[in-house]
Length: 170
Image (cartoon, rainbow, N blue to C red; front, side, top):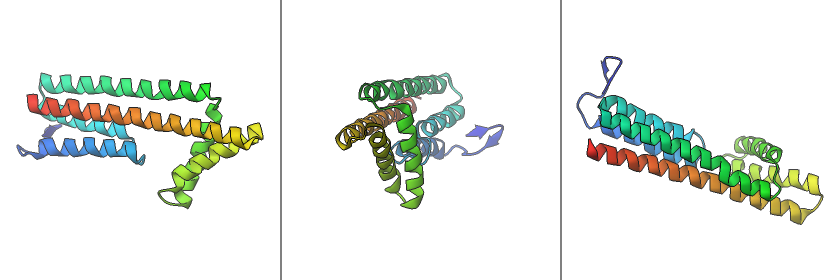
């Protein structure tokens, strides 16, 4: 692989494996949101396309960019509509996210999701003063977040599949 005139990988299989591992790390970043998943996966494809330096490599990268854009668009449209229909406000999600971030540092690993749920529940409880309604809104928000993650994961797998087909074809 040559980046700016430097031979990084030489002619070894690392020119394929390293971008592949970066793509897989990006997909894992969707499941465990520590790194920005799809961007990292797209970066892996970009590194591979730069190494290929061929029209085929750039076509694969362009398709992956389109898959990324489609995934990002669907990620905000579909769950957002469902949560809005259930009466969950964007400010509720923001507060839930902030409490989730604090929870991640207070109770490592499981504190993030627990804080997110607790934050949404408490905000909805303070708004409605009804525990059942607050819990219903919390469940709707959780379904929305899981749908969003599912869409992002499918987009990541589509990027990986496109890249694998590109590797085989070039």
